[in-house]
Image 1: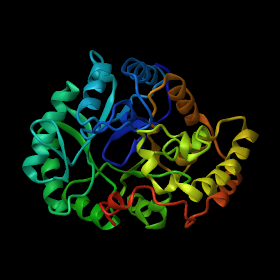
Image 2: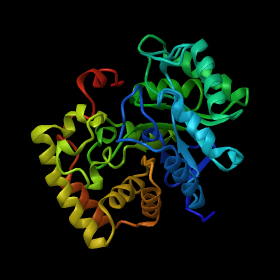
Image 3: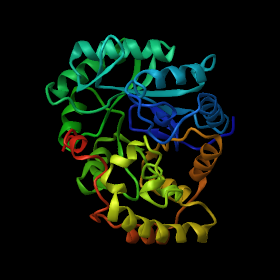
Amino acid sequence: MSSIEKTKLGSQGLEVPLIGLGCMGMTKIAHMDIYGEADEAESIATIHRSLELGGNFLDTADLYGPLFNERLVAKAIQGNRDKYIIATKFGYEIDDSGALTWQINSKKDYVKKALERSLKNLGTDYIDLYYLHRLDPNTPIEETVEAMGELVKEGKVGYIGLSEVSSATIKKAHQIHPLTAVQTEYSLFERGVEETGILATLQELGIGFVAYSPLGRGFISGEIKSPDDFPENDFRRSIPRFQGEQFYKNLDLLNEIQKIADKKSITASQLAIAWTIAKGAVPIPGTKRVKYVEQNIAAASITLTEEELNRLEAIVPLGLDTGDRYDAATMATLDK
């Protein structure tokens, strides 16, 4: 296994590679393709190649599938569990028949139930990093984090985290049990965590930051030239950022980003990943293809100068409207 540089995620003792692997796109969610169709054998080969390159930090969730994504990860890590750092998430309620209710449930008894189900699906007896996927508006965060903390005491979970939460929620949660990480969408096209002060809160409290969709949901790869390029059943078609005039405005910005990448003889995707690492995040770009995991991991060794960072951020400055990152109904579920 070659050595990709490692970093401390938060201040509770977890060490991870500078870049993780997002597994969401390797399965559907409730019959919807996330980023086009996936092939199980290629997905598993991607996880194995990532490990060979030192990329042993995998990110999944019970929502993905639902449940099938964790089972795919289980197949990939079988016989090698101890070589991987596994992060999974719970919160989107899944009933006993394995169907999504689309409610968020983080009540104490559900936390334990979800954890046991994830352990079974992942074929393991512990999860390295366990996240609450979204804030449950009907359950105090203190109750949820207390239950998550009990799982740590029981040895079933190594570290805990939250996803898509506000500074106020982070502060309340961290007092109950130390958080290791907060995961939120973050890329050159999505800098809300900077604008709202969440990054500053994490730095102040010694909590790690995991950036999902660091490639703007694949947009920064440059392969999508028009909204019609998204496969028919692809959920990105529902995202305002990728619709109509906004899509083409963002494409103009991407063309400017591409110029900086060309000058460095790297891809725009690699530039975007290197930028998130330079900003102090651990990015978890999702891919289900070996060639992309190789490209993404290579980005961990790219250094950006202060001048290059400034030029990039001048193209997509803080506060620039690049379009909403979810449809209106999903935006309303985010903790503000």
